[in-house]
Length: 295
Image (cartoon, rainbow, N blue to C red):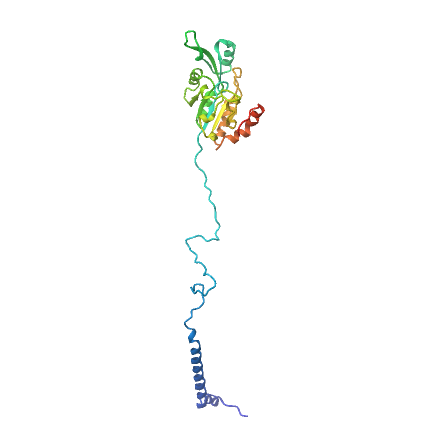
């Protein structure tokens, strides 16, 4: 069989018969397209299914739209706790007088050698006339001459405490005796208030008890320094029991070396009560004395 030349193949593809076949195929495709269009025409009015459709035929609610102005529920919530930056209320220091800040004796019954020894040791002392509760024969108030010894470091103690605390003098002594005495030891008027025997109260267990609530109802920032613990039996968690001072103790260092550092520490505490309870255990001490105290 002979092979067709390139000229013959080209001429055969452009013959009238081939052209008629292509026309027939195109006409058939057009007819099929018209039939398909008629079939899908009835469905052209229905929307596509979507979550935004409001059709009542859906069995679920559409997803909620997130408001960008509100934080996402998946965000970690951080609780902010308010910090109290307010400064602490100034500490109130209540000071006993006799055998705490000073010791006093009737001059007539005091050995002269004691004053000489005190002077040699550098102890400050002075004599003072005080009004007594006793009366003269003619009914006039009786005056007594007393010799007063200052506890070592007293004036420096008052100066330093006044820098961070309000000081109140609370004594079971009478005003006629105590007032002129305090005038002598507090010449700078650093003690802001004075309370005398009439301000004390009597209890079932002791007399002349010093109730601190007559000074402040807030007991968190008040402390009493007293050589007699029974003075603060109503508020044992506010008391500092100090060693009694006598004229024969010229080298006593309680005020500056013991009490002052403790008061400075307490001035920085929100409440003095738990500190003093842990340090002195006065509740247990009063119970040993057979005196029940409130918590």
